[in-house]
Image (cartoon, rainbow, N blue to C red; front, side, top):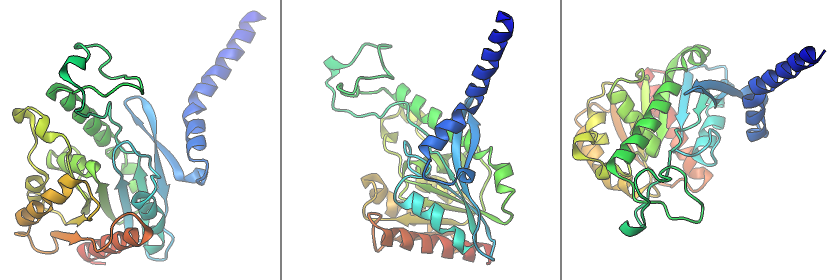
Length: 290
């Protein structure tokens, strides 16, 4: 009798373990329709992606949206606006959970206050300053984030297959810097159109020179696919500083293969989000001949 009860308890426990990711996602995205929430498995853990079908007689394909790191798939602002407003224009939206950082580096801590090597390098109390990380630790963070992004994007084949047509890849802020490198290294498939919004890499200059990547401008110029480079005035200072270099490197390409668009508005309100959406849709349709 006890054996039967034990088996029943084990079956219940296994069942709860299997549905736990779905339950967590439903709580996290309780404000969304349940059919929008899909999963991919990253490093053995289920991660949410949000999928919205096209809502138009015109069906051009899909737009994959990757917001800044350490945000959610329905992050307020530009990400959520794009994923919910592109559908009526003939595109499905597939929004990924961006790569999470192992830690967020800063450089305010005095050398004598830094923990010894190996002591709580990844987990810190909320009342403690973040220690000064080494080049090796920044490389670990970079490799961790890029591996997670690569694994996610490479699992999208079946989802993309639900929406035949062109595949537009949109990456925002530091995620744009990561995705650019993944495309440059051929770690992910080329989309039909690549859109970078305020791209930057914040701590690249602190990494050992031998391990530093080529700049975003240098990597973009090697790509033989249509690229829209959107820059706003409220972007990260590094992105603003590097925008002229990205333009100078890439203006050798025909307009169909590279365009830098300087926003007249910023991303603090809906007007700016709509301006970006209009530019993304217009450039994408022109690039694919639709």
